[in-house]
Length: 327
Image (cartoon, rainbow, N blue to C red; front, side, top):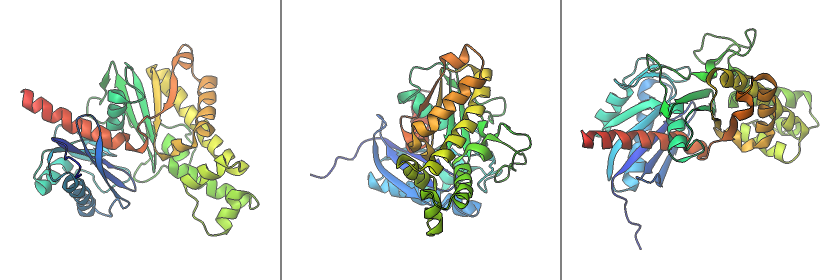
């Protein structure tokens, strides 16, 4: 039997520092097709072309029955105009992403910050469901952030709030990544990129460890590899995850003191490390944060994992279409 094509799908797009994920999503957040692109693009035109290709693949998989597209971009944005203002990882400064994609696709396109959208999905139907106040940290190439206050995504006066990854946790730390002018940001200390950097350094210092043997054999050190070796009991890999977890906890302790959230969600591929990452993060937060926040807050992995951003982009598109219909 040929699968029934759902009516009224939207396409959610999560644009990351090194990949693009697009999904055809129905009203119940069911995903009917996923289109993954491993390249982010080297210039603006290539980034837009990669997004367009992923959207067209997802759309064709549901026979083109698509109402709108939502896009999550790792940048500060002007949400009303659909413009990416500043991105530390992508060539999208001052680019009207929503307008350009709408022209290419012939569909309404809506955009927001990628971590805002990840939090939107988790609040709508995930690990933050029912929470009034929540924070999101997405650990990937960098660290994205989202803030929920009284049940609503907080975007600030210019729409650029919640760049939580660029909170400085070590003023004498290493230079931050990409186009960020700062040093010692949480992003450079505790992101997936930081995990790979620290694991590579430790592998060189511990040649007899499984991590060291992997490096010597020519295997590229990646986050998934570190996590795999840690779960297999390699002490060097576990040590690196503990270091990243503690650094993450330092950042979370400040966020708990500032926002007093119900829950802090951690997303991205690094969360596959589970308690090897979360336990040191919680311990560090409790040692540094003030009561009552430190005793009240929960630090949890996202429910939707790497798909939170894509699903949140779909929620954005669905909400925008519904609002237009009701107007």
